[in-house]
Structures are given as C-alpha cells and as structure tokens.
Image (cartoon, rainbow, N blue to C red; front, side, top):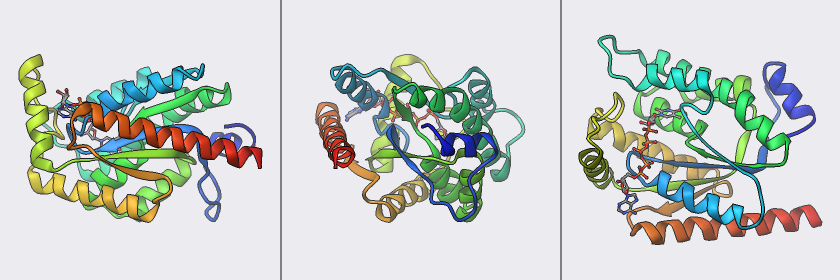
Length: 239
Ligand code: T5A
C-alpha cells in the first residue's frame, strides 16, 4: 500500500471516521482449529506464482522475528494464564510489528501477501471466544493496523471435526496441543459463530469455504474464489 494509508499507519493509525481500506493484493485465511489453512495457503501461493507474481506467505501471531517471540508467549502453556485483555493486546502487539515489518513492505514493492490468520481471528477468538467487546478490538484495529485484506477466505468446519484433524496431526508429528487448542468445545463454538458473523457483515470480503470437504476440493474452491477476485479487481482497475 502506498501513499496516505501507509503514512497514516506509520503515524499511529487512521482517524476515527475513516473507513479501513482493503488492499487488493492482501489475502487472509481464517477458520477454527484444524480447518486446513496450511493446505489451502500452499494452493493459493502456487496459483499466484503461476501468474508470475511475487508471493509472501506469512502467519499470525508471528510473521517477524519479534512477532514470533510474542507467539511463543501467547501459545506456550505456562503456569500463569494471561487475562483475555493481555491475550488481545499481545495479539495486536505482534500484529503491529507484522504489518509494519512484513506486510506493508511487501505490498509496497508490488508483492501479494497471504496471511494465515489476521485481525478477523481477534474478533473471533478474543471477541467471540473470550467475550471481549468487539468495539475494543475495532479500536485497536483502527489505531494499530489500519487496513484489511481485500479477500478473506473463511474455512468453516464443525468443532468436533476440527479437533479430530488436529488430534490426528499431533499424533503423527508427536506434538502436544498449545494453550488455546486446550480450550473447551463451547469456546470454539463461540469462535465459529463469531467468524460466521464476520462473513455475514462483510460478504464481499469474507468468503466462506466448506472445509469439511476433502482437502483437494477445499483447495480448488479457494483457488476459484481467488481467481474470481483477481478478475474482478483487474476489471475495476481498468474501468
Ligand atoms: N489466535 C490467532 C487468536 O486467538 N487471535 C488472533 O488474533 C490470532 C491471529 C494460532 C492460535 O492463535 C489463535 C488462534 C489459534 O488458536 P496456530 O498453531 O497457528 O495457532 O493454529 P491454527 O491457525 O489453528 O493452525 P492449525 O495448524 O491448527 O490449523 P490449520 O492450519 O487450519 O490446519 P492444517 O492445515 O494444519 O490441517 C490440520 C490437519 O488436518 C488435515 C491436515 O493434513 C492436518 O493433519 N487436513 C485435512 N484432513 C481432511 N480433510 C481436509 N480437507 C483437510 N485439510 C487439512
């Protein structure tokens, strides 16, 4: 992103009444645990690379060395449980660094950015799951993020099926669930509801993909939505 938006973000956020801009080369992937974001991200990256584009794939929390350290703090199950507010502020501390250190520089040089999770996850997990006021999330989004993806793919999957998948993966790779993965099913039901509410509120940006299908079908659906989005963006720029 060039011009006033990047400058506004660098200066500490957009004014209260400015709508948040969506960047047409910024794509995010969202969904509950085990929805299959990693698999889809690879398919989207390949589809974009076939057009000759530079693609930066990244993730949240994380995406820069400092933001990855904050990820460790957030996901490592320690003795002291962070409060919901601490969790939200750490997510945004990581995101502030990620936006300025990775996302904006890539967009400014003309690359595409695909992020495994972005601000919608804070609305869903800390807003929906932890019950924090979405207006608090929105205020942080406006002050420290200042942009939204042009396209968000929400991989929607039932909670039980997601758990089954992550359990299967953890068994294969000998991993243990992180701090958030240890939450109860009702927490993840709230997260899912909040994600679907985001899609209803912004249907043009947030596109729901049925993630209960076989992996190839999910990836194909996601790539088809991306191609449509690219064609529409190109037509808008040409008009
Ligand atoms: N968080 C994050 C917040 O609370 N607030 C925030 O603001 C942000 C940014 C991140 C955690 O942080 C929270 C959310 C998360 O709890 P993470 O480790 O990055 O932690 O967790 P996830 O993003 O949930 O990543 P996962 O790896 O758990 O899920 P994926 O990437 O969606 O799933 P994936 O691709 O690894 O697939 C899981 C397993 O299922 C299989 C895969 O092979 C794999 O084994 N699979 C399928 N099986 C059958 N059919 C399909 N269609 C399949 N697709 C994948």
